Image (cartoon, rainbow, N blue to C red; front, side):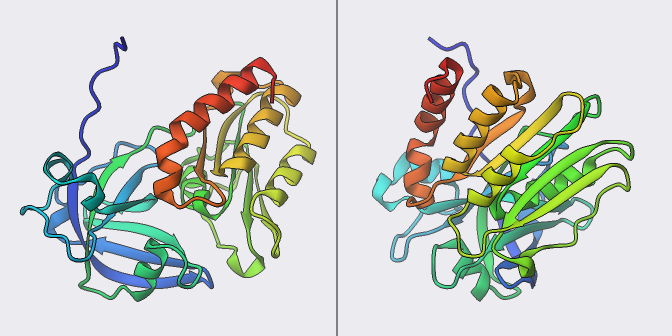
Length: 283
């Protein structure tokens, strides 16, 4: 029996679109506001995330809309779809929540929604969750990910103290997808990787495994496509000799061939199996 406390149900918030802009050809920024965010609060993590809620067409949900109540009283087949997104920014004074969406045409659920969104449109969201922030005492910081992890990497870089050392790898499709990120003028090495049609994660794995690391012991933030994360976790643990305590935040945000519903249903088991295999040196 686990001694963990019961998991607290995520709070449901109602957010209204107040602004939208296209940052790059495939990245859309949506800023939300409204009284429905009055109870929204973050706690200093740089990887805060929310679950965006998309009700199923034709299904009547209890009012007021509350996901905990829906899950308790509605058949699972009628539950709204959820999609997980990193908080790109939260201004509590202005009550403005910023989320960046990767958009690839009609593919997916949240990307097309963001592309079609207009000021005044509303969306429910759950959260926030999160648990990582760069620790000032670390010798240096290794930040690795694809577009899905870019908002969290950007937040981590911006939160670094002035003298912090960091090596960051971000994989995007091509140079047009690069963004100008804000971070201290200290020893920060940000490397943009362009896959140019190759499978997501290949360029990331190649770059990290061949890189010369700074001296000292890093704190690692590694997120992105699950297969790439698995390969890099093994490399860092077994070839770079990093301990579990240095792997501060490591997880697959998504997996090739699965939508979020399919990935989330097996993500915990996948991560558990990968960790067990790699701790034993079997994979």
